[in-house]
Amino acid sequence: MNNRTFTMIKPDATEKGYTGGILKMINDAGFRIAAMKMVHLSEKKAGEFYAVHKERPFYGELVEFMSRGPITAAILEKDNAVEDFRKLIGATNPKDAAEGTIRKLYAASIGENAVHGSDSDENAAIEGDFFFSKLEQF
Ligand code: CMP
Image (tube, rainbow, N blue to C red; front, side, top):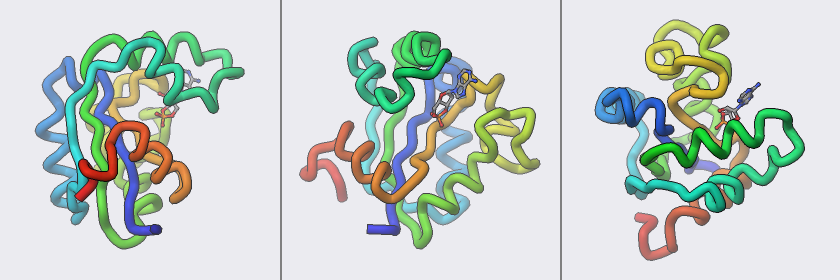
């Protein structure tokens, strides 16, 4: 399926009250919400989600950050979802993010970068299934 992606609104953005603003940008960009929930990840669950980054120097910091407070997880649908959503969120480091992107507006740093977006169709499906049962995906 190449018309779905997965996102999380991260703890930094949740703490600052940016959830509504970010969801509005997602809606305005034409994505349909196919699943959504607010979750407080345990360190164990955050570590599992980001297991692909286990060997990176920032892994410990990333797991601590992602389990610091609630996130909003969602599956989004649109033609060309993965690529278009990565354009909407902007570069991983907000210093490099283009004007008008979610990270340019809402992200604080490369670590606390407000939102996650899947990097491939395969990972979008894996990440969506990590949070949502098939009964919760509409
Ligand atoms: P995300 O798109 O969720 O995928 C991996 C995350 O690791 C990334 O966003 C950042 O939050 C984090 N990350 C990537 N590079 C760094 C870095 N150099 N230092 C700290 N965190 C990073």
